[in-house]
Image 1 (cartoon, rainbow, N blue to C red):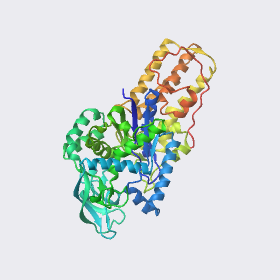
Image 2: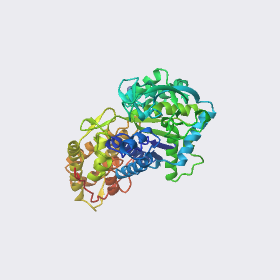
Image 3: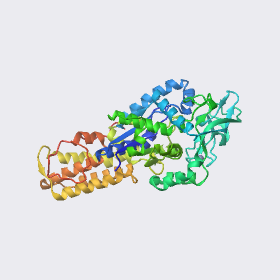
Image 4: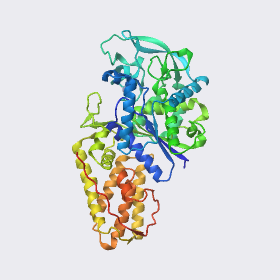
Amino acid sequence: MSKRVAVISPAPTANGDLHLGHLAGPFLAADVYTRYQRAAGRETVFGTGAQDTSTFVVTTARRLGTTPEALVADSTARIEATLAAMGIEVDGFSRDEDRFTKLVLDFVSRLHSAGKIVLKPARFPFLPSTGEYLVDGYVKGGCPVCLTEGCAGLCESCGHSSAAGDLIDPRSTEHPDAVVEMREVPVLVLPLEEYRTRLKEYFASSGAALRPHMAQAVQEMLDSPLPDLPITYPISWGIPAPFPEVAGQTINPNAETMAWSIYTTALGAEKRGELLAADDQLWWPEAETEVVYFLGFDNTFPFAIAGAAMLLALGDRYALPAGFVTNEFYELEHQKFSTSRGHLVWGQDLADRLPRDVGRFHLAATSPENQRTNFGWGALEAVTGARLIEPWNRVAAKAEQWAGQTLPVSAASRFAADRITQRFAATYQLPAFSLGRAAETLAEQLGRLDRWQVTAELAGDFYHQLEAVLRGAAPILIDLAAAALDDTAVRLRDETTEITPKVLPRLTGGAV
Ligand SMILES: [Zn+2]
């Protein structure tokens, strides 16, 4: 067993608040995984943040008529508040800070001085009317791999990287009718192809436990020559590159992924009271940290392919991540969430309208783990009412008649509690981690307690198993578990011989 677990969810772009797609995708899963690991006795740090170096910050700010700096400050505060409102407890939260900038520059400078990154001419669309080179969020066109229309950098649809210069029919996102020229500019790149064989070995061994869509994308990417990863871009937004041969260029945000991961892990460990000898200490092989990512499918390339290659390029200094848990898109009333069209539900709205345990249960039950899933208010009311709120309230009412009495617990009930613990454990652990099955296990076990015709003789057993179910559900039902249980530690072998039922809180559906 490793010494420590580092859970990481890539920082969302600081160009708005978090909507339910963000929460039902990586963030709730990362929080639940973190809570379970801790309950099972493993030191765990969870890191995310707000990403401000993305070009989407600039494009959104222009659309809203504000400055990128003001948008970053506002979005960062909102993202942090929404995570807190939903009980997603983050240890390391990265933001626009000098210490992060320094870590990124140290990281790329190490690659540079080791001769791993090289100067190469690359093609970029250029907008003569503004004098801007177009990368990532500045440019739209057809994906050279899957033909889907989208921005450059990463394709949301197939997950492959799509260099701006390779887009089919590239157009400026801000000035779609303006004439675009192709120009060649020397930029620093990491030739990923040099690492393809070792990446294949890595995914064949440690990284084998991938969800099917990511497994397919990784195989596609590693079956053909890999592209160069631009380390610098000829644009002004971002961290200025410290190399004279690319004066005036900035660091590609997708080349920051590992420096950022190291940074957020260090912040998280410090917040949990650890004193680190160096910011990157937890990533050294001897630290034996098990790094697990929870990420949208479209982050496969920058974190799993380019990210692992950057670590390999630095030799034996760093261990590679142990796991990647991807998610697909979450839809609202059967259409993709869209901030620009206003087709979305903010995380904060859900937190305001419902007890957060109910919201967390529904997001878990409908989590888009392997394919797109749908959110709708009607479905939320029906699903949480029938599978959580009503059975829980009946079970709590049934238990209440014995509140305050000390009751015996039988050997058969200890056996049953161990079975319940095992059923939940199977859903919370890699490689089969699944929020959906955790929610389903909870609903099944609650249904069983609900149907149980409890006699006075077995009242102790009933309450004992109720506690076992709540202990299993504790990573999802955080407030109920905190109110009802003395502790949420996972008990692999239950040794309870007597128990004293409490008056349990009831759940409400809120104002859906
Ligand atoms: Zn594509």
